[in-house]
Image 1: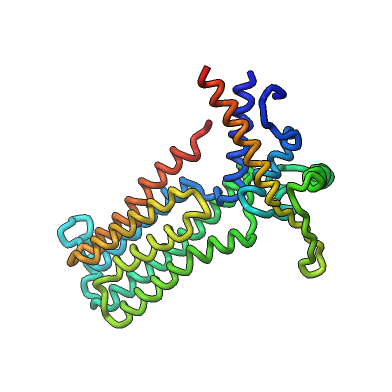
Image 2: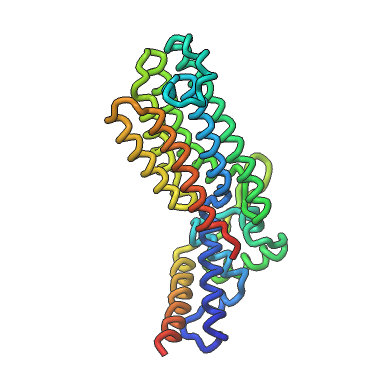
Length: 100
Length: 213
């Protein structure tokens, strides 16, 4: 899909796009929720969220529920913008296809 | 096949966004079954209250005719409560089965709690109000109050699940409003709202969301 303009490299991976979809729809989600929705293993999910975190698109909030550590991921403002731009680019491409 | 791939990606995004934010476990068939159960219950209530003298099939139920009105209403109320409990059970059993089958989440998390609260608060208010009215001997508006508050409950919780549930709520509200301006025929409106509407909506729901793709 390299020929499409405006696509975000960070979202080329299906799983990362899935994480961003969940966070864009809900604002935030905890680790267990993301894991079950995307049907991933702990390690797999952690490596993808780390990538998105480093890009500044999501933020990680750690807290405790009782004594259990709880990780929640929150979408950042730039994450929202990047996700919207990515979708807009995909839609533009589709419209281009139809127009021809 | 670039175009197909992009379309698929957009569909995946859309599906993940709605799967994660909406409660999709409600089963269409359970709505149909609830409608059928409500139909049976209204037939039983009709037999007890005795609206059906004209119908030959109720002749053997004439023994209820010796009862006075308050005890008839009490029996009808018991039927209604039993129906409510069976319907709730049906909903949950079918919802759990559906979420297992489709790998949907069925966890009592914050969202689910909020949805249940949004549904049950108007419903409980309406239930208590109609109970109070019955206890004070005002039977006339019971069916409209049940329909109206049930409609409000549906509209109130619809944004947590398929938004189309809102239209079932609107339909219940409309039937409830017509009912409260109509003298008598309460059971007919109740049957229309709780039985016919559920069966019709349930079938529409199955066709729209649960047909094999």
